[in-house]
Image 1 (cartoon, one colour):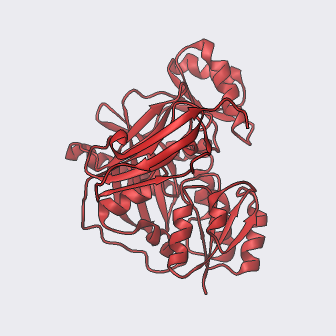
Image 2: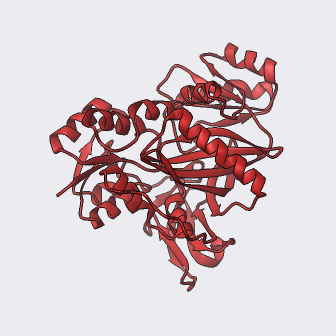
Image 3: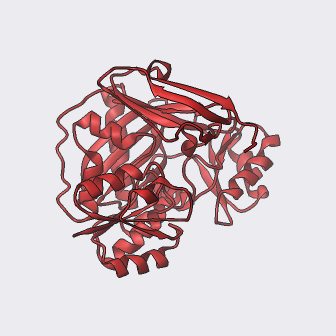
Length: 388
């Protein structure tokens, strides 16, 4: 039986684990210790920090795995690339993964390869941040270089907010530096792509539904396709191809955040894994494929070339809460056949006020271009005062 190692055991890795098992693979899940749902799905578990590439390699060699992958997180990407290189597996390289996993390296790579992106600087202290602001002005974005899920990111519009934003970003990084970027006025979109044997299989350009958490905008939904002029679509596709070539990403999913300003795309970030917030489900629905299966096939070295003949409009949103609470009741109230609604928690569980992606209560994926959560699910919460 062939073996697949999946890095991460969170809600976004669970469908990948389940699909691999459905395909007849022996699935080994790796994550730090905790109450993660992926542990209950896998055939075997290693409780290792997904950033610890040497320990993960040791486990991978011991198990004799046939492939390794992740989805929805940047934190584990370097270890995926490291194991791929050391064991000659089919997936993203360590060099490409290292660029994706460090936003400072990424922005340098963009700059050196003429990828359209915003002005930026790697900063080690507040003096560096203030000097950058003197050059480009406000607003700016300060972010950690090695986190995902919108953690530690703050938009700053005046000098008084710079210190707190810098300190916040530092809390979410293992490095001694963070990145400051010029804020580009425009609207944000997403781009997901898939590269197999150096051929881009598709470029899926989609709209984003964002939620402002008080410091930054966090994606809570997406919709396919993005309605835009053909000239803009071609520009986005060209920048996507240029980004993939610059980072040298191959045999992997690609996820990008893009700002459109004055009909010009600016690449904010790019990573060699699939996006979160229902992106794999939407790609599957949009193109009429099973994207989790495609990711698994690629990781184990099977033929993962795909044809994307369909172009079905679809939309997804996260189910979130604006307060800390305890779930008293939850149910799907819609009888639409084109809707898939999933809850991450059970009645009686505590949930958090939404601030970043993992704070979700569940997700809804549907065909079409509109989705009203209140028409699909009913959830009743009681306020959580912290008592047991």
